[in-house]
Every structure is written in C-alpha cells, then in structure tokens.
Image (tube, rainbow, N blue to C red; front, side, top):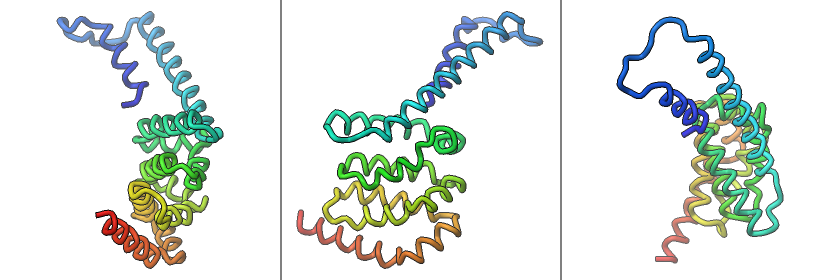
Length: 201
C-alpha cells in the first residue's frame, strides 16, 4: 500500500484511544495546523521518494549491485503506481515512465521483466499512459522481448501482458499493433515458447 496513506492512518490512530466517540464540529485550530503540517511533510517525502526512484531507474546497470538496485526501484514503483493518478505523475512529474520503457532493451531478464510489469500496470485502463507508451515505441520493444527465444518465459509473458494493456480499449494502440504485424508476430512467438517448453519437458 502507499506509504503516504499508512502515515496518515498512523497519525489518525494517535488522535483517539478508540473508546470515545469521534468529535463533531469544527476542528481545533491547533490540531488543524498540525494536520496541515503533517500532510505537507508527507507530500514532500513522497515527492522526494518519487524523484529518487525515477533516478534509480535511469542509473547504470554495469554491476550486480546496480542491477539489484534498479530491480528494487522498479518493484517499489510497481507498489506505488497501482493508482492511475500516481501512474500519470510517474511520467508527468517524475519523468520515469519513458526511461522504464527503454529498460526493455536491458540485457538483464530481471530488469526487463519488472519493467514490462510496471508498463502493464501503468497502462491498464489508463489512456494517457497508453498513448505515451505507444508514442515512445513500447509496442515495438515489447514485441521484440516477446520474440526473444533466449529470454526467460516469465519475461516474455510479462511482455505479452504489457502489450495487452497497451491495446485494450485503445484504438490508437490497436491500430499501431496491427500495423506492426502484431498478430502474426505473437503467433510465431507463442509457437516458439511452446516448442521450447516441449523440449524442456
């Protein structure tokens, strides 16, 4: 859950011992001032955290430690972007959505898988994010990931989920997907995955 809401809940619980009825009427000026200050602090903390995570997404991935740090950042962003407004802010304020799309080019399966998951989450039933992603070439990159026979099956599955999120209820994305020969490409990729699984079994 979003840490901002956890902090607000914690604050509200400290205002009552649970045995008395909630007060009605205007809030005490001192309590109002305290709440406003607490909310400002929470927003500042969340803004700072957003910037840190977006910077981590764009950091190098040359060492195992850097790769692990980037994967952790993607996981934290996934936890936050389950709300449409936060997903939009991830792009408009944090400038992290487009760099996340570029992570589909990473040579590390873990990063590609988590990037695809985050793209799918942000784009699901979210027209602004769908449009930004399609314009940034996300469909082309996701199809390349899905067609990569050397990639882990989980990575290719996440890529397929992201493709679905980009084209669902999105005429612009659907048109782009079809113009790229998406249907036949996915069919070939699916057949390749089936053959690979058959060999493993």
